[in-house]
Length: 386
Image (tube, rainbow, N blue to C red; front, side, top):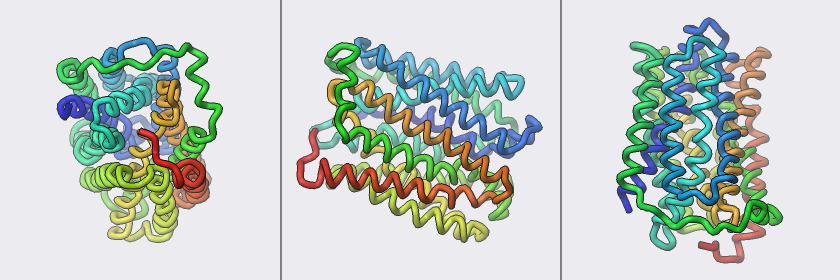
């Protein structure tokens, strides 16, 4: 089973490079294309919109074997990023990023279902965090490598590496992931029944607002580090290593905490800590040391609430697991798209590269409160369902 989980993690590794490399090379890419950083941020939005469009397709795939779905998504990961390497202008690049985003949400959604089926009883959240760890390792190793390659050669080669990672993922899933139990088919409309309860909406809201708030800041980490903390563009390679280290630690730590404590209180507490970190970033971003420490804390928080909630939504969407998996990914990536827009607008209006962090504070607060309500109403006095 460890090999099967590793194969799933290879996919999130490829997706992690595809998604997060853009943050580390935004300045270089904008310069190469002759566009503003704010306009280049639209490529982050394109990827997120692709996620939001691709994830709902799971509604029509409820009868498909889960392994087959994973193989299809791995193939699209390879295709979308291969197109990115040959895109001749901003418009075609936007389209390539959209295609690259299509399998992202569905992969995480189906992957979470498969990981839970492969896990030992009581270890479901930890197994999901292991799958998500592929993305954090991507930010720890893959994204800095892509950033270095961009600085030394070309950003096109960086996305070519992602395409290759997608091919390797396809092969590993085919070899290592067993045929797992399919989901019970209760009909198309039966998948929507769980939406009549409050708990999943609290998760979706907590994810959406928390993601918007934190991504307002993180979408523009490259210009913040270069123009505010005064690192060089070449420094972004090792800076992204530290950002990835924060994600890696936050994901696995909170995945283990969710085994001992209720997932909702873990996620709510982690997001609440994000409020303090974002405020500190706004005031201390000019210090090189402080900016690095706060960035690592911020990325740990960004991923810290992910694995508990990704696992929880499978529990709270019984009968509509595919839809639940799709909707939480829409919440994550709609948050990313909205955040890039908010952050870009704040910067374009002249408030500076640290202002997006402050703009994110009230949104993270709302997300934390929603997850706290989930804990108080559904988990504090009840055992968390397996």
